[in-house]
Amino acid sequence: MLIDAILLIQDVQLLCFTIIFGFVALQHRDDATRRWLWFSFVANSAGALIDFLSGHLPLWIGRGINMEMIPLSYMLINIAVIRFIGRFHKTQWISVAIFAGTLPLFLMWSGHPVQFPTDSLVDLAIALQVLVTGVILLCSSEEATRSPRVLMSTFLLAFSVVEFARAFVAFVLRQDPDVFSKKLETTSSVAYIVSTSVLPLAFIWMINSRLEADLKRQTLLDPLTQVWNRRGLRQVLDREVARYARYGNPLSVVLVDLDHFKQLNDTHGHVAGDEVLAAVANLLVKLVRKTDVVARFGGEEFVLVLPHTDDAATDILLERLREGVETSSGAAVPVTASFGFSSTRKRKIVDATELLREADKALYRAKESGRNRIVSFAGEDDAQVLRERSL
Image 1 (cartoon, rainbow, N blue to C red):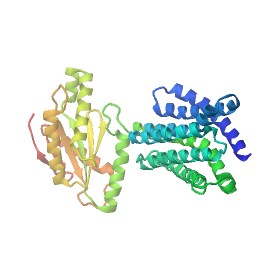
Image 2: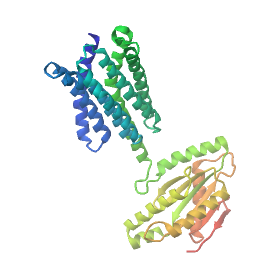
Image 3: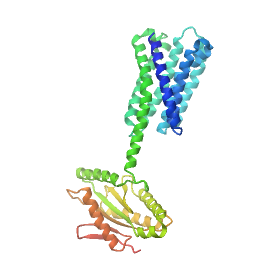
């Protein structure tokens, strides 16, 4: 009676989710995750329909095919997870193999007078499917979806333990799991109910978490160059200055200005100017380390944040960048750049605004001295030209 009531509640829930996610999948036709998630609910709803019409259907459909619908739905959920994560694509064949391996047994056992072996084979198939899905979720490293992934994987792994226990009772102890332990029956029933609610909601949570992270990232990126904008730069600078205050590792801040950029725009047009900006930003990102940060400060100016980098190391890096911009900016229009930088220089107290101001003074000196050169800020009246090249 309990199982029958549980199945009725599940059928109603699944029908509702099938309708809702059908509209969602239709609205987002290009999203494979939503589409495969909807397919999983369609499979469950098909099972509910077959169950409702079982009295009018052959046994191989009413029981054989019907028993495969729930494992099929979990296989489709696994594929939806793989599509969402974008990795582990080969593991979907494990789910397909589980489905293909159990289907002949369901068809052969459809007319068996004792039903619990068939039900327990469903339990075993579900346990294997959700185990694969739970492991995939745990192996993903996307930080934005960490909380919903951990929640979903924890539930799925616990669910697999319950289902494996039912299969063990049936196939090893050769007893009906529902008769063997009422607690096991109740736990399994509750797990079924929770799965019909938690899995779709966890998927919605994961999708929304990724969207929120993407939107937040977009607010911190310059749309033209796809490097950090001023808001993102401020966050990075504050973080790195705080690290310097705590650990004392050197930190350099660089201002980069493209030479005669207004003239370039006036001569070749703003489209060409935008191409130059994007090409230079891409070059800077390629030439700096992964731990360094490139940001667009505004107009034709960029800022580089170089953690663990003293004056000497900064000088070497900037000369490579200066030569790179001069020789291979990637744009059709040749361009050069001037560099001004400042560093923490073992000062006890320094803030982001001060470092930017000092780098700006050094940049002004570079522009004033003839452009296409590197200048280091060593004091209010002592900017040093470390590299000079004439245009």
